[in-house]
Length: 494
Ligand SMILES: *Cc1c(COP(=O)(O)O)cnc(C)c1O
Image 1 (spheres, protein in one colour):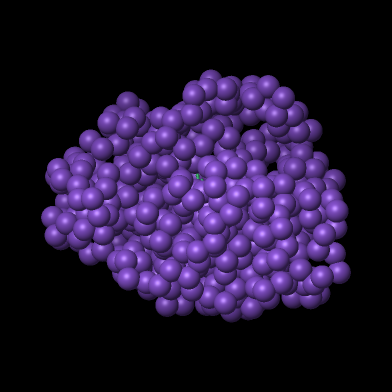
Image 2: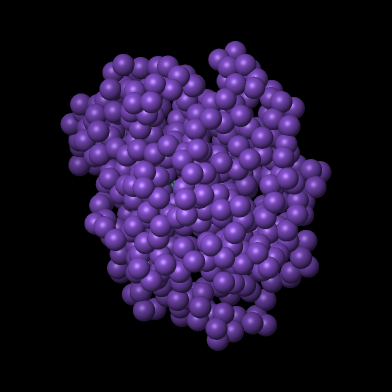
C-alpha cells in the first residue's frame, strides 16, 4: 500500500518514506487512496493486549514493516514506559466511560504516539538505506515538546532540538523541558511568542532545504508534529483497546456500536478514531469537542470552515487552535479520495481563510460526526460536577469532552454507550483544576499540586513531582533571529 498527497493522488511514496518525510512536497498530507487494504477483523483483536493490538494495527497502516518487525518496535516503544501495563486503561465514570491516555512519561496523551514515532523513524531510516542522522526540530507551546523529547531521548541515529517561547509556557512545562535528560536532546528558549518560535522553525526548514545547508554533512532535519502518519497510526490503537475493554467487561456485546467523544485541537486524535472505524471497528458517532475556539463546531454545523475570527487563550490551551491541519485528511476521505477537490479547499483557506465543502462531503461528515463546544465557565463547572458526583478528577481538556458528550446525549436522546477520551493528567493543569474543585491557590505550583493531591486523595504523577528537584540541564535562551545559526551549530553536537 502506497501513500499519496491529499492534494495530488499521483504524488506517491511508500509508507516508511511518508514517516520520514512527514509532509508531502506540495504541502498536502500523506494518505492512502483505497480503504480496502487496511481492514482488520476487530473480533480477533478483542481480549488482546495493547501491544498485540498495536502490532497488528500499525503494521496494517504502515505496511513496510511486517508484524514481526513491528512487534520489536512496539516493545521498544511501550515496555516499562507507562504507569499501567495496558498503556491506555478505560474506566467507568457515571454512565459513560473515560479512556485514560495520560498514563505515559509526560502525563499527556501525546506520549502514546510520540513513544512510537521515534521507533518508526529509526526503522524507516534503516529500511530506506539512509545513513544520515535525523535531527527533529520542533517548536512547542508546551505539551508536544516534552513528549517528543522523552520519545526521542537517546534513540540511536536521531537527535532533537526543541524551541519554546521563554515566557509563553507554564512553569511546570518549562521545567519539564529544561530538565530533560539524554545526550541527543537540546532545549532552547526564544524571546518571542509561540508563533515566533513556529515561524522560526518553518524558516529554518526552508532555508536549510533551499540553500542545501546540510547537504553532505550526514544530517537531515525532520519534524515530529501531528501531521506525520507515524504519529497518527499509533493513535488508532487505543480506540480498539477501549472497545475491547468494554466488550471484555460485559459493558457491551461484541458487535455493538459505541460513540467516542474527543477533545479536539489539530483534529489528529479524532481522525484516528475515524480510521479505526474505516478499519472495521463498530463506531456509531465521533463527537468533536471544542473549547471557545469553536471553528470546528461551526464547520460541522454549516459545512463552512472559517478561521477569520477572534483567537481565545483558554484553560484548555492544547486545543487553542484555529487551523486544524488533520481535517484535510478527513475531507480527502469524505470526498472519495478526490485530491483536486481538496487542493481547491486548501487553496481557498490559504487565500481567504475559509472554504465551503460540497454537498457530498457535507453529507458524509454529518453521517459520521457530531460536534459541540464548551465555554470557560462550563469547563470549570464540569470539573467540579464530575468530581462531586462521580469522585473522578479530570483535567481541563477532558472536561470539555465530558461536557460536550453530556450535551449531545441530552439533545439527541442517543443511548449508545459513549467513551470520552481523556487527554491529560489533571496535575498538568493543577491550578485550574484545584480552584475548580474549591481549593485556594498557593503561589508555588508544586504546593498547589500537593494540596490537590491531599484534597482529592489522588497521587501526583511521579514525572511531574520529580521536576521540582531535577537538575536544569538546558539553559540556552536566544533571540528569534539567531535560531538558524543556533541549529547549524547544535546539529554537530547531538
Ligand atoms: C494535543 C492535545 C489535544 C488535541 O489533540 P489533537 O490531536 O490536536 O486534536 C487535546 N488535549 C491535550 C491535553 C493535548 O495535548
